[in-house]
Image (cartoon, rainbow, N blue to C red; front, side, top):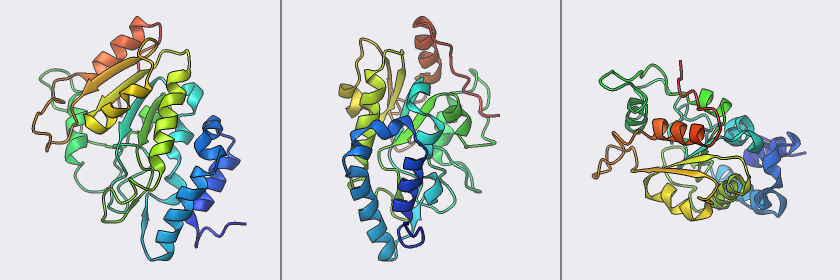
Amino acid sequence: MIDPTSAPVAAALAAFRASGSPWLALPFFREGAADAVAGAIDARVAAGARILPDPSAIFRALTLTPLPAVKAVILGQDPYPTPGDANGLAFSYVGSRRLPASLKVILAELAPDGAKPDLSTGDLTPWAERGVLLLNSALTVEAGKAGAHLRLGWSQLTDEAVEAVSARDEPTVFLLWGAQARAREALIDARRHGIVASGHPSPLNRARDFPGSRPFQRANAWLEDHGRAPIDWRLG
């Protein structure tokens, strides 16, 4: 039995496997890559690193949005590196301080023209429950070290998840924000699925090509045009 205190990521992986998730069919989980990633991160834990989010939330994006339920995909980079901020979903914020700047920009796109955005919550759990796969390129990070796990092998999971969604017949829309997300466009069958590309919502994006791009409206229009119900993007 895995000791969750000494190997928390391996324990989280074991729990996810026990769930019977459809995502477990991915080669990442079947052929050893998941175990290698868990081992590498647990070695960092043994060396004193604090891993985020809480182990119970590491696979939360896949748990809340199983493969057959996916209607839309939003790709992020890695969890927020401040303890208590991340809950396992890309861009989702559950901290107690002001919302992250990028998330404010995202939520502003939800507001009707001329209206103030609702910034009362940054928890994107309702989206995940409605079929929006909110998947980061790395499912873990170290406290205070953004990007620390981007090269530990998580990207294989993200690639395979995108390919698995693309391989389905059900029309799905991919919202690709920024260069890293848009680099995965080559994995998507654009004959069957929609691609709504925008710049990254970060205020540091000098091109400022996310504000006004209306990704949510465009995604819903595409879904409706292809016979699927639009997504309710409200968080309240």
